Image 1 (cartoon, one colour):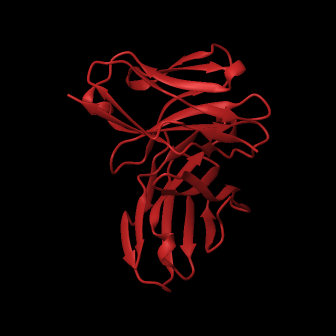
Image 2 (cartoon, chains in turn green, cyan):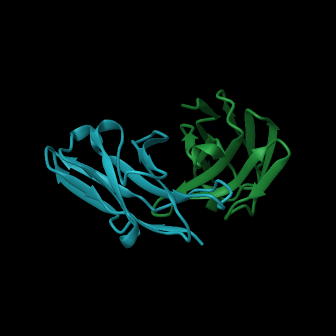
Image 3 (spheres, rainbow over the protein chains, first blue to last red):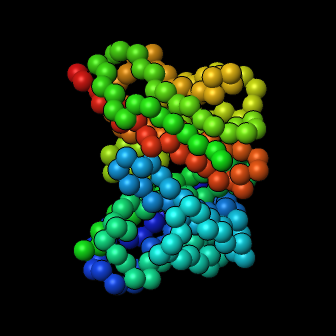
Amino acid sequence: DADVTQTPRNRITKTGKRIMLECSQTKGHDRMYWYRQDPGLGLRLIYYSFDVKDINKGEISDGYSVSRQAQAKFSLSLESAIPNQTALYFCAAGRGRLGNEQFFGPGTRLTVL
Amino acid sequence: AQSVTQPDIHITVSEGASLELRCNYSYGATPYLFWYVQSPGQGLQLLLKYFSGDTLVQGIKGFEAEFKRSQSSFNLRKPSVHWSDAAEYFCAVGGIGTASKLTFGTGTRLQVTL
């Protein structure tokens, strides 16, 4: 299984601040994903990347940006955080030939005051 | 567009009882189907997956799921639930042509009473 790590695990910030969430994986998977989880809404895709030069918007990309610094690293930024971005954020990694199977990090709980 | 429906938001079962969590999907071709489990404070762990072949798939922790194309369903089952199975369960669908994107259901929270 992929070893996916996320930092920080918890973050409290204020409205208008810029925040970066980091994700790294050690198994060489080419595809990486950022999701947010809200109660009752399940997981929704924010951005995904098939390789360093291929970044794609998901269903809820407004207010977010990403950077794929290397195959193993995929960062999510909130340029100007707002309270409705308070959520649990998950990074995932996977390979397409595995039929979209994805391996998830432990999550980052973000609170925007 | 692909979609997943988990009609049960919350289910409570007694330890030792059987369990079935429902999942219905919408997808225009042959789907890839997954069940993930999220324990409190944890990330998502893959329980099992269906790509092709035998429609009854076995997963970890004693779980199994059956793919029924005619009903567009992929229900998760366990014959005897343990207290440690209390968690939230997510069904997901993907497939060729979805650009490796998974669509998740809204989840079913399982409570186990002793």
